Image 1 (cartoon, helix red, strand yellow):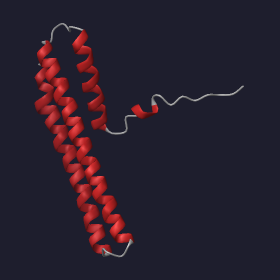
Image 2: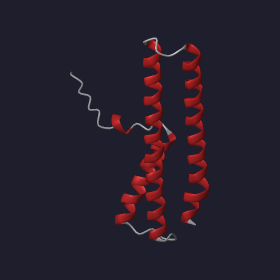
Image 3: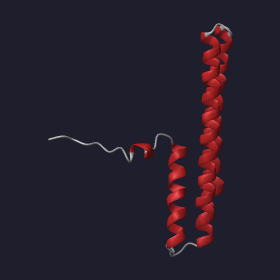
Length: 118
């Protein structure tokens, strides 16, 4: 018997927390267009989901930009256009920037976007 694998859900793998926020906000936004929740104003729910999607997209874009910068620095290092000490320093800076952005975005979501529901 031959097995056929269909990878429809492979693209929906949630690898990072900001992608989870993106999917969560998108699903809530789509559901809020068709269903009326009880106990929560629909405008608050839609604004929560919209800002959650926007925050997820912004963090995703910034993360991709930082990865591209890191890849470019690696390219420069491999082609002897960047010293090892500079390469390590840039790498540490990029990692620090990524974690700082993650922390700020998560704190922003917890303290400013999530309370919009209540």
